[in-house]
Length: 247
Ligand SMILES: C[S@@+](CC[C@H](N)C(=O)[O-])C[C@H]1O[C@@H](n2cnc3c(N)ncnc32)[C@H](O)[C@@H]1O
Image 1 (cartoon, rainbow, N blue to C red):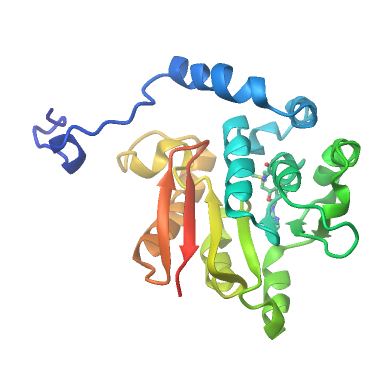
Image 2 (cartoon, rainbow, N blue to C red; image 1 turned 90 degrees about the vertical axis):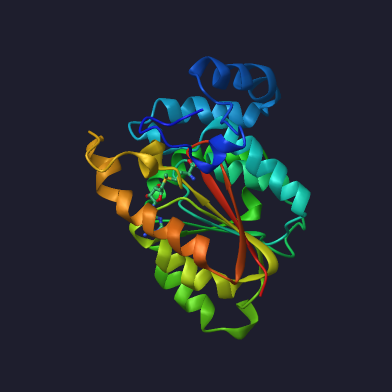
């Protein structure tokens, strides 16, 4: 198969194609494998979030299912989330993590806006997992800097989910690599940025996509070139890049 300019791209030479070529196929995945298995509490939170003016910020339901499975597979015990909003990804995380009672709070969750978190908090409480969450209101970067000042925090996190201000993703990465353990994971959300990462330079993009595109492109380049991690770019939700610290 040839591309528009007549030249074959490397993935076309070997016949690789993305399967997700239509909304109907995405809907099939949701209807068959995702929505029927969504826990009731997550469904409730998703419906509450759908009525919130900023609902577009929530991760997708398949992204939530993926996150929940990933945390179980990796047996993560200590995690961090940057960018909580109403808490859909946070609830997916809290449901997956083991319950150590009062001995240890496994999730450090940060958002600049506690009001968003409070929209979902009653559902998180009803689900019986609120005690797993240490929520901090405020910008995440100073919290990371504070954590780094204490040696005992270095290499202590099993998993970090980053879904916040795109302009700081690179700054988060530079700090998180010291906080996550060797063998631990950092997952960056929105790394395909609505498809804009592969759009022609003059493509007419919605304003917010255009505004943050360079930050996402810079992150993707830095991750691809970073020898301290192994990476895997997944076309789940808006694109998730998994980074496994290897040194
Ligand atoms: C895309 S939403 C997060 C969605 C969430 N993960 C979910 O599943 O619903 C991004 C969030 O990041 C928060 N945010 C923006 N800048 C931030 C910062 N500097 N530090 C922490 N949170 C920030 C916003 O308030 C917003 O709630």
